[in-house]
Image 1 (cartoon, rainbow, N blue to C red):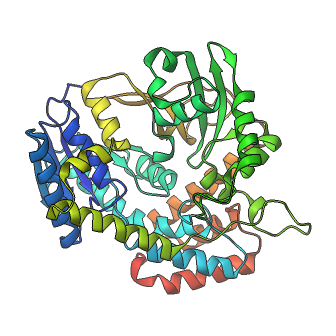
Image 2: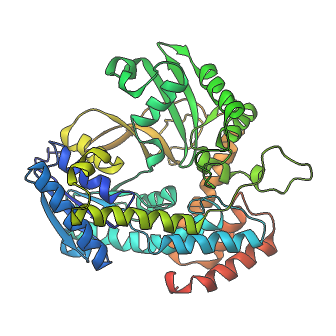
Length: 457
């Protein structure tokens, strides 16, 4: 494809505090992006105005030629777009809370509630219809643009775009495997480096780290340094973490007991889970249904109030930047690259970096189907992602991967077609479902509780 000189990047859902602020930072700091256009779209006028004001101040502070647009309707800014980042979620804190609370009544515990279990299915029901509407407008208004899904459940939404909007060039992302950060983390675990400042291109080249699996159910299939297996060193670091971990630090449902769970899963499957905060939710082991007492307690439930408080604090920070209570120079020093705009920079600049992308397998995992939608290390340019070979998925894990893919594919098909029978089948296929009657009750209660956020059909 021809090189794009100054790209137009549209971020839909720019009021997303986890991505919008970082996207502004990267667009301003990258010489490959900061003479283009950043279009910020949000259906909340107040949030849209705030993020636009923040972006204008950051651009002025940096002294770059980045053009800022704001819009409440994506159709107003999609023409001539080169990249469209989807990062919206309608009142997701409230609805994830409902998903988790109602599911807990029927014995399903979710620490995140937005990718697997009833939470993943219902988040897809809330977000995917709008994603497909957006895909249709991208095809019509900017058919050459790359659409980047950054909305959970990333695998469900990504495979839906790939299968049901095939003329739109798309890929799906998750920030859990943002490169090079994930590689640096495991380089520390392996004793290759002591600190991030020690990382360099030679070490990057020598450390061969291969991760694969369905998004949020990914596993380390290779970790070699100069051709030497360093998995044992990484596992020893995990084991020491289990022994020495105190009760201080992050006590959120997604974080608690992760070292112990990660090491236990390594002992069971022989490979290391790399996204434990989500992976633990994909397995029945931590649902609390055992007869004997397990040393690792059942999952804690995702905390709605804590997340609301966290969002409020983030918006206060944005307000302080806009008002001048906090200097914009502090923003410049606080934030860093966003995964999506990091990838856009790589594609535009043809920088040759590799990233973990949710895309079709195409033989990368040799004993899984070519069209399995997996998170894989990819070479990436303006022609899109090309997965790098990783070898076989170990027996046992492969079967779990296939079951999760079935649930995700059924969910995507059910939402796109508006088919309740397929939706129910997805619930019965889901790895957290233990009872037909309970699953039916969850469906009924969530459909009633979230009616205003769900498609009509």
